[in-house]
Length: 256
Ligand SMILES: Cc1cc2nc3c(=O)[nH]c(=O)nc-3n(C[C@H](O)[C@H](O)[C@H](O)COP(=O)(O)O)c2cc1C
Image (cartoon, rainbow, N blue to C red; front, side, top):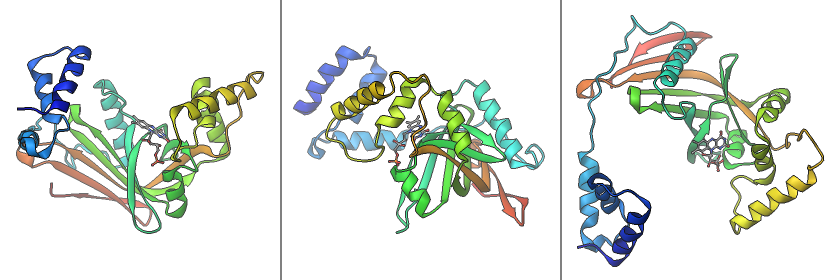
């Protein structure tokens, strides 16, 4: 038996989604319902039943490149070729000065001078945390090719000129968005954001080129450790880890 909220939601979802047995199961199992209904048990059961065997490729000292940055480029190209959606989406973990971690997805926008580059608002939560503590970690997960890459390193702001150039390459709408959004601050409603965007548009309506806001720009992450993970059968995955020691990359195999 499913609760009233669930029944209503199901009715609504049927209208907007083509109903197949598969997505009906997903809808029922993931709907927020009272713990008393017993549906939560079904959800937990289904999650524990989700498992996948990995068998597409192998990774070894014999087929990994000596330079982990070159290996990253190789795998990145293969992710692009495999048609992965947003292969440059990466998970960024930061830690504030009280040791409290936080994480989110950002987009890799370049690999310049062996540094991983992304752009953001310097006053955002991640921006503030990186100013307090530049140590951070990145993770890429490309499920279709059964690969994960983990990077640990130190972030610093890129030169203003690089941020300017990238800002100018963005569509005007994204530029307005960067000006309008006080990223990570609490806002009362969406209308405030849209009103700010309208004001910015008006302010710059005669300007062909929008200047980059001071609080917006890039970070580059200098990697100190890079690990390549290739899924293998029976959870005996391949993990090859590179660590920078005295400016040289040392390579090791890790247990899965
Ligand atoms: C696919 C995807 C790509 C994103 N790319 C960026 C990005 O490149 N830069 C950015 O500041 N936020 C990006 N975001 C939004 C962040 O995940 C996050 O919501 C935002 O930066 C605020 O994070 P913070 O409060 O921890 O600073 C992206 C989100 C998704 C889902």
